[in-house]
Every structure is written in structure tokens, then in C-alpha cells.
Length: 206
Image (tube, rainbow, N blue to C red):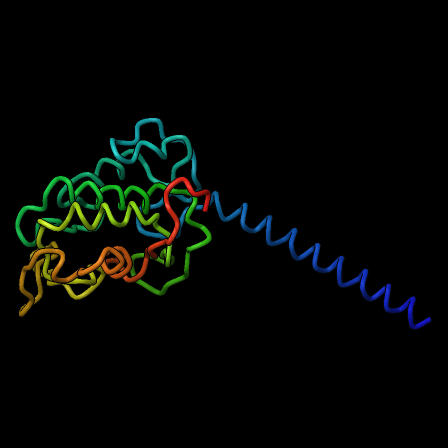
């Protein structure tokens, strides 16, 4: 009798684990086709045939509109009124990484596993610790070494009195490497840990 109960209990545990795994797999799949509840995102992902330039890789299934993709390529767009050239002209090599970052944030339907709820006036959700392949992070850092900035966290602390971001009082412009001494510092700190440097390479399958 005790043996029968043990077998039944074991079967019950196995069934519960299988159900939990099935739910987890389904949940992960569902998270790979969602849009954030944020300022310019569509409610649901879908095709956008005319996404602009660096945003075009997402045209078959996108969370951004064509207009958003065009604005993502401007120096001071209506999206966030953010000025890349707050410490002089940012190099084109550096700027392309920020445009790509904006396109990923606005357009990708595959950020679900890293979406977190936030209580902010301009968005209800954000991304946290999205893994970046180490080559991409390293290239971003290298391409921005000759550009200048005055802050290490670009999410907060700016002077917005002019209608776009300007360096706060007392902040000095220095090369990126002054505020971001390593590639990890740049990728992880610049947007309040929206990204996390991965140990894996591009094409690793991880």
C-alpha cells in the first residue's frame, strides 16, 4: 500500500512538473511577440513595409510605425527631444549605434523576457538587462571613444529647460572613455541597465 502511494505521488509530481514546464515554454513563446506599454510603441506587433534605414530589419514584424522609425534617425526628434550632440557633434560612427539602439527599443517584438513594469509618466514598461553580444558592445564603445558626453547615465539628471537635454550645471564634457572606461560601463550604465554585456559572441546561439 505504501509502495502504491509512493508511485502515485511520484506520478503526480512528474505530471505537475510537466505542466509547469509546458506553461513556462508557452509563456516564453508568447513573450517573443509583444510590444512594450511605452510612449511610441504599437499595441501589437505587425508588418511595416516602409521602416526607415537602420530600423528596416524589423519590417516584417514590428512594434514601431514608419514615422517612429524615421524620427529615430534624427538628431533631435519628437520621440524624446534627446540631443545626441550635447557635447559637440557626435561622430557618425558613434551615432549609428544610438540609432540602432533606438530602433531595437522601439521596433523589436522580441524583448518580452526583459520587460519590467515601471511607474513613470511617459511609459508603463521598460527593458532591463537585455543581453548584448560582446562584439556589439565592444564595437559601440570603440566607435564612440572620440565623441564627447557629460554624464554616465543618460536616463536622468539632464537640464531640459531649453526643450531638449543639455548638460546639468557643473557637468563637464569629456571623451566617452572618461565616463565609460570599459565597454561594459557604456552598455550597462548609459540607460540604467537596460542592457547587460553578454559573455557570448554573436552567432553563438546563446
